[in-house]
Image (cartoon, rainbow, N blue to C red; front, side, top):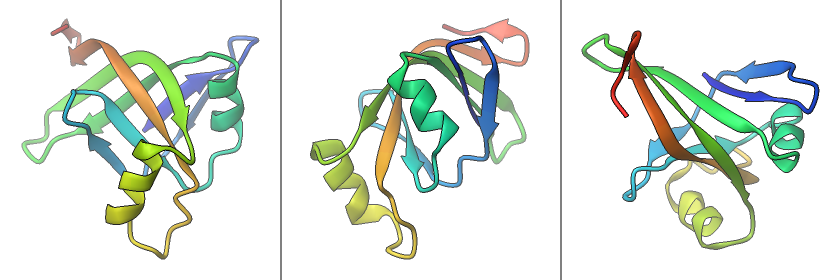
Length: 106
């Protein structure tokens, strides 16, 4: 799940079909069909990624979000995302907080 908030504080959550941890620790979420999400990012939203590991541990990552299109990050993701997806861009979450359940790890 990837969540953002609009300028009025209204949350928007989507299923993130394709996401990846970047080498520098940031989280990349591929934009296949963003609408409200992209608008929220343009307004400077914070973001949250919620995921479950194979070991069934849940984590939530929070931070500021950048949108990437027609740049190096976008070009790189096009090399590993299946061509059946549009991959029009990417949201990148700059990790500022990490939780495992209620326990804050960062």
